Length: 173
Image 1 (cartoon, rainbow, N blue to C red):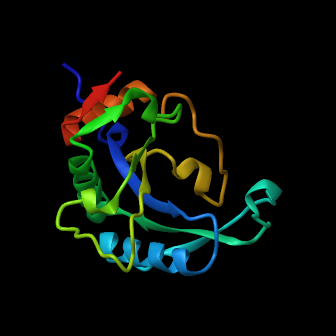
Image 2: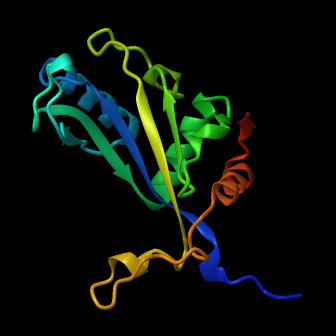
């Protein structure tokens, strides 16, 4: 019986919580308030990458807010978010890199969150980025940075297996 390599173990790299408002102003400020209530972190503003005349969006316009969580905070937030989804995620929520993405239609679905009439109803997106414990440094190191080989990458099947075992989710097909 061979020992498993501990550096090949799959872990959560980060969790990104995002609210896309599509416009600057009061709605953006309320979205910031929602993210602060959910994560206890100060959100960062996201900007439009290109101009879309149909939606009245110009390049560089502030259109959303996001928060990045790491380590134990990330794990706790994913647990709370999955509780709001009744621990069900569709199979198409996993991309080719093995990351999971899902949305929550209303922030009041999260436990211990109450409706605030000053804020209104806001939904948000959750992106769970997975990595191997010893893996993706290859891309980010300064000296001899390289592409990540196939054996280090995470497949969607491995990601679903990790999420099912770690968070006890039900995969909806």
